[in-house]
Length: 88
Image (cartoon, rainbow, N blue to C red; front, side, top):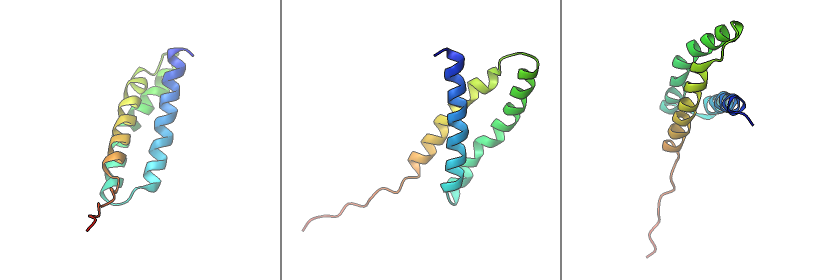
């Protein structure tokens, strides 16, 4: 696998995780999950423009791993941890 193929795999993984997390989150977590869309939408438009001019979408390749890491972190922080019960 080349580096470009790995980067495209990360872009696709980010897009899939973004959709899944948006559908499954609620309340403040949904706002936190939607936040990367504000930054990724213009980057995606730039990527389409770069690909039309036969260039690599460098910004998309740089931003997707960061956005994916952020989404995984937000999802991890929003997990409901079970409460401990004390044995008496």
